[in-house]
View 1 (spheres, rainbow, N blue to C red):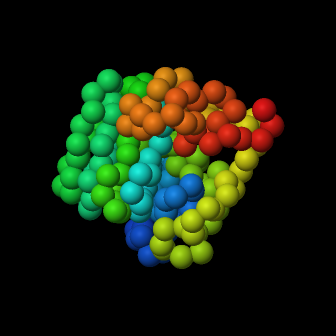
View 2: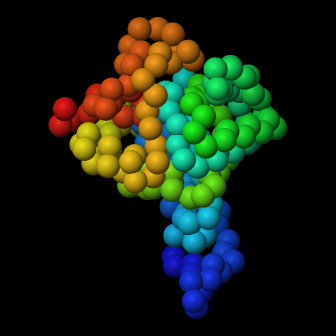
Length: 192
C-alpha cells in the first residue's frame, strides 16, 4: 500500500496486527505495522511474537530503537549492562549502542520501533511471508542464506554484527563470535 501523497508528503494510515504484512524469521513472527515506505523513511514499527530463548546476538544499527514489552519477560543487554524487563517495560537504545535480547518467559510480545526507518527491511527482505499469525513451525530454514546478500542489506540499513561473546547466551556455540558468514542469530550462511 503506497502512503505518499502529492509532492512526497506522507499520508495518515491505519495498520493492524491482523492485516499488516507478516513474516517468519528464525523462531519469531514479525508484523510490519509501519515501514519506511509508509512514513517517508522517518519511522518503522514492528510487532513481534517470540518464543522462549528467542532474540538476536550483539549488534548495532544506525537507527534509534525503542522496545515496549507487551507481554512476557526478557533480558536485554545494552552498553554492557543487563536489564530484566517484564510486561509494561520500555527500553530506548540510542543508535550505535551494542545490544541484544533473550526471551525468558514461554512467549513474549513486543513493539519495536526504529527512527529513522530502515531496519524493517531486514525482516521484509530476508524472511518468509508468514502463513498464519502464529510462531513459525520448528526448524524453519532461513529464507535467505546468501552471506553476500545479507551483508549488502546490513550495510544498506546501517546494521553491524558485534564480534564479541553473547553475554545472554553463555553456552559455547555460534554466538561466541559473529563473523561475516553468520546471520543476526549466529547461524552459518552459504557463500562463505
